[in-house]
Image: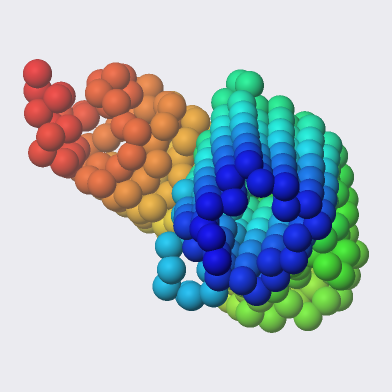
Length: 428
């Protein structure tokens, strides 16, 4: 069979299952032709007219489709190689007309779609990882479940707002992104970083969030359904926030880094639960049992408790510190290790020998406090106020965000212990 079909009229031809590797179809008329399941590795299809052609399952590895017209063509499951080890990258679709084309589940890994026309194309489930979409027009394209990780776009790329937002989530690291009410329905957000994102009211129906980072994310009023893929932990947190957890048994539950602000956990059994770094502001824990619960760095400011709430003494003390304004509190030798004391008022407090190791003291006020012999190893001290505090024999080794200005605003700072490099800064 001739391997040069360039410029030939092959309208409605039947090439199904054929081995056409490196065949020259440049400028050929292949309108309505059947090329399904055909091996077209390295074929030259530059400028070919493939309008309404059937390329279902065709192997187009390394094929050149520059300037080809694929309007309404069916390329579902195409570009995938029959060999699992074959090179499927770098399909050339520069300036290709792919208007209304069906690329459902097509493997377009690293494909070059520069300036391609993908208007109203069906890219459901397509793999566009590392593909080049600079200058491409994807107006009204369906990108449901499409993989947009590493996809290259520029200011000339035309994307509907929804899919541009999803591209940004996948490719631009932003902690605390505002996604209130966002339409993320049907998006492939697997492995995405949504840490501290505000997803309140967002539509996540049918969205793939497998292995997504949802630490501290707000899932209140988020819309999900049976097709939403959500790890067990985050589905539980969604249920707590949106269905309530009154009297629910959450013994040993993994709620680490959960944002449970304003959740109703009245009477819940949280014995042994891991609430480390959880956000519990406004959370209702009246009558709840938190015996042996882990609350390392949990935010207890504004948490609602009552006399029936069972809380280990350490965490009850920390709750009092962040919720009750007391100047000059006596906390000598107190175990405050791993507490979240962000913004706490410890003015003039007696903190002799207190254990603050690993504690978050960001923006805490220790004005005039007596910290003689306190251990602050590994503590976060961003914007902590040490004005006039006694720092004699304080252990500052391993602390974060401490500045020499903070230290020198205190008394007896020369008698504290520091990392060598920080001590050298103080002596300069």
